[in-house]
Image 1: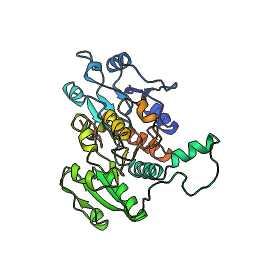
Image 2: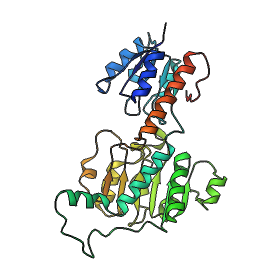
Image 3: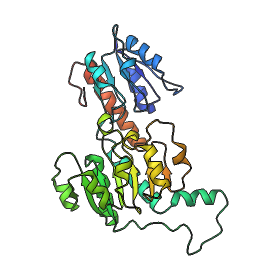
Length: 322
């Protein structure tokens, strides 16, 4: 008998086809998010649940008894939306999909940096509204990117890819903070300098790009105190996790001119976005598009499928995190 699995959202068609061939798979054709009650029921009815980063799996949805689920094969590299302690206590394995979304997420982070620096979002909205009155010397003056200093918080795969784009593409100097020492050919080739603290990176940088994990340890990593260290001409870019930034503090910093602007792709309570961010012209907002290329989303699905197959074949899942 094939293992019974449930997919919580729509996945790329090719991956869904393979899932239904290999497993007794229940798909979400309407792409409607599952409720906490849906998840509580799924733990009792399915051998595996295939969630995404937009799902929420706190301890409260894990059943205290009668749990059938043995694997959470997550579609995404981040898994802070899953209470991994609750999964571990019930003997449920958790896997993710690392490595395949590095380049497209770095591409998007660089896009946000350029958009907010050159006020491209404002210009696009103005033109579409029919409010553009033609070229003039003082219209929508932005900030030069080439030759500026980029600060990176979290020098993992995506952080390094972002640094490479900035340094080799735009001649930017790179400084970074990482919890562990980073000393490899890639960072040396860019002459990237590791600084001893987040505060040191914030104080020096013209642009700060966040590439650190989410979860309790990094919740509100960038809050009022750290925003106040940034230059008033600096911009904050976040493609990591929404809760890494204290959004209330960010709105206040923007209102007071403590920083010059922000480019965001992720939010603490997605799909809700604070009104104070939506209403500001010097903020570029994207709807969590970091991995949104056809090639990457399919590769993520294939990675999740590989983990699923290996697990139920009794082999080590290649991307097991719990």
